[in-house]
Image 1 (cartoon, rainbow, N blue to C red):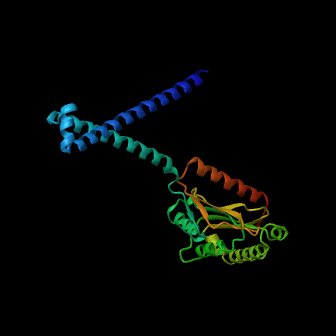
Image 2 (spheres, rainbow, N blue to C red):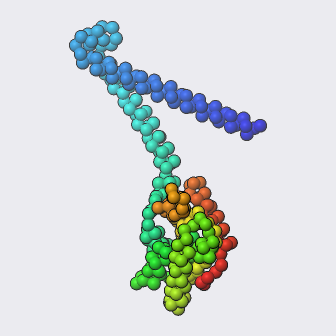
Image 3 (spheres, rainbow, N blue to C red):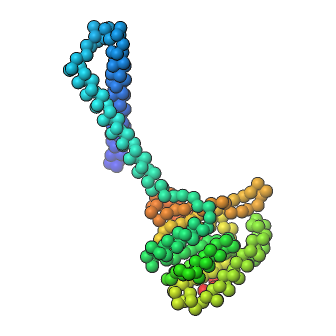
Length: 278
């Protein structure tokens, strides 16, 4: 009961302060309009004579009062505008870095930045992929290129070709595409095994057998790149044309719910996965 009374009093107090603020805004706005109208009419000879006779004759004291009123109204307006801007910034601040990227290359660029600037403990990458047909070539070029990284743990999830063959919803050609990508990953991992071990790169490939409605990339620093499947008008499935980037700095409720969403799909894939390369 005590908490309920306190909440009720708080609501009443908030409502009262809102009403007082609105009344004050109406009063100051009305004064400003009346003052402006008076000054305009005072510039017209016939109306100035009427105003001076029946309302107020302008003198130094009257002008000072009018200037004071206008200045007060301006200060209040600027203050209220500042409060509104601060409120909007506070609301939008946690989401201002959220953006859309349309290419896996942008994700790989984020991985490269983390490798160059992040802490060693953050150098992890979980890829919940489809066939990895576009992802693996770019990752392979980075892993084995001129400025090859070190001390990374990379886990790749790719759809099981056998599952794809049985599926009546996912595109049939994904099966052969996934099989080719997985073979390339195995071959490159075997060829570069000694060098990868020397640079403390742990590369792991897993196949999974469930519908990847949510997929994407999770970096060890908290960055997340989310993607989704969509239905076409012809009734087939294909990847949506963007990744939604949830930056590590974004700790809003929305961003953390998206992280939970991705984690749940990654955990589901893990339960349906069989290690293929370690």
